[in-house]
Image (cartoon, rainbow, N blue to C red; front, side, top):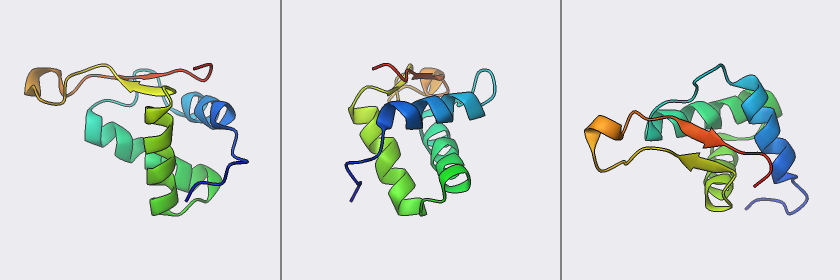
Length: 84
């Protein structure tokens, strides 16, 4: 369960600032990278961080730019938008 007092915009901005240029790449690799970053950066458990990444994606803060059903575009980048 994700606490309602988490500022999703700020969390997205923190993720974006800590990721290198062009990161993350790939749908599952990208989600794993962002999850691990939240674990290291904010001290969330793996499960909490996974839920937060899913929530950020559902709320439009994170958007995968590829097509997970096609291998040729499954290695696309993510759009990370703190102002969604």
